[in-house]
Image (cartoon, rainbow, N blue to C red; front, side, top):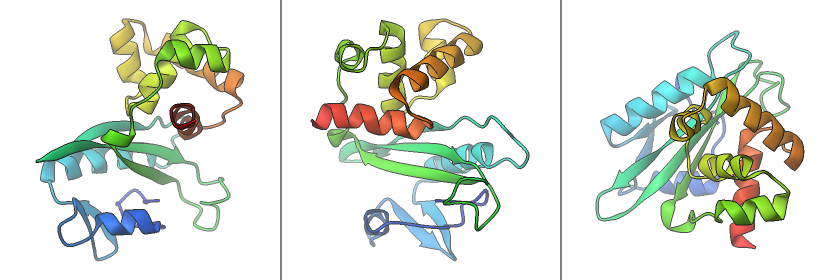
Length: 179
């Protein structure tokens, strides 16, 4: 979990291991940093967006982080509102940052997602798109629909799956692939 300045509020052991001497990340003065400047700029932009004070409808995003020789990693940034139990002691909005090796992130085909979760084809494509690290706006552009229409699909997707956060949708899709 990061605050709007990329200061680490919580980090798990796996994330700490990414900060090894040859890893793609590091912690400097309590702040999370990627070793590649363009990747760091993208992270900071997404974190600022989801942590903007007074913003009631922050939408997360994601991107692929190239690692040179190996496969890229997927970085997803999702909002954690100030009233969420994990954030409430801090009383500020936080960003949840997930970093997944793309080799472990091969996601179920959208027709399988639709079948297993009782979704429409469009809702399943949106779920797969979110799990692949895209934003709702990216999905709207890919599907050539308005952002409002994409958000309507997201509302229906979340209602049908019982998910309350986009991250939960991502985890659900990942569990379908793993299971």
